[in-house]
Length: 457
Image (tube, rainbow, N blue to C red; front, top):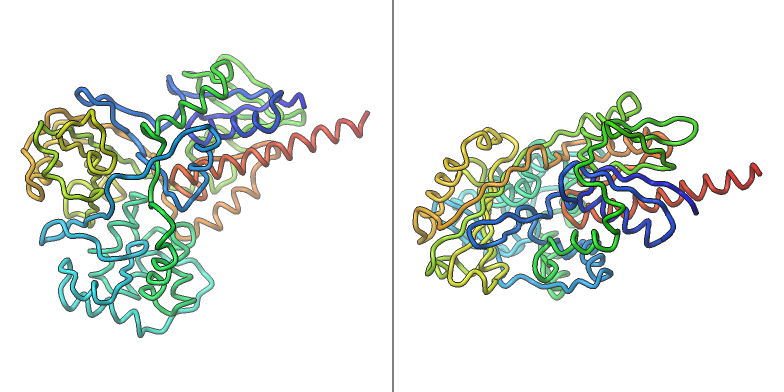
């Protein structure tokens, strides 16, 4: 099969598309165009003092198997976190999250005892057990569902920090259908979010860790993909400027060159894909909003490692602190290179607080460390720090997103395929799944072209 395929965007989705195509048809001509100097997207690292730390995602969700399966295919060993459990920022300090699934409390007694809410808030949350379920056919905001079932206090103090934080989004705008459809299923099937969470927690009791990563860090995945694909197929510092579709196929312009192809996979943010396609872009591509975030990497002096609780980190209710969450790297992924230093990643920026990203790096670090020192016995200044900004990096799956994506797929020109986190999942595992699906679509499209050519002979 002498097909030619161009992949625009060399993040984890683009690299996986190329890997899958070459795995299926080794003779296929694949070219990856990557605007940055190095392919891999946000699965990269940053130097902080004498350490090299993850500057993007630090793990994969284990219950979504696609990234973990890809690692195994590539011969990468997987490792589990060195700590379990998470905390939540409250007016009483950092408190352990009660037993929960998707942030929904699953144990009535633990919820009644949880000190992160008032007694009235806890009692209001328990009314979920007796409220009649609402049967609906349309999408609903996460916040609307949670407030209706659990009340405002439980929603804002307990559930929203986790669910909203995963998208850097506003739960009153994010749609249930595209983010956490389990919530609607629990209300429908169990008549209660709490009962649904309890059943989910019971069903996952022996299923293993929540997160995994390749031994040595998530950067090992793009490294392995790049090595397998081959440097000759990856054009770094080469941005696509336009994608045109005509009767003879697809053409990708790079500013000084035009590449002809039988199919093109655009694995960029959706608004970039819309710009590349121009008039041929389905309207919905421009309707998916994005939020900007930053990762603040902190290395504290020797002797501070014991100041961190035995937990993976904490989440923060909206507006309670300058960060939305923090990961205790030296607890979650212990490394001899850390010594007895506390190493923390804080996440800054989300819908409604993106103005924080306009501050100087030093001001962001100072604000984050001041709040950390108020919650934990840490010094007010780190030994080393780094701020890594990711502008317009987190797609917002607002109400109606599922239907919007369906319309985008239906409106794509023949030979054009999309992959990435803008459509059916924001995590690394979801990006890999989207790449698998895009590669399958390309192979079917190319097979159809080949069959048509053979019939015409």
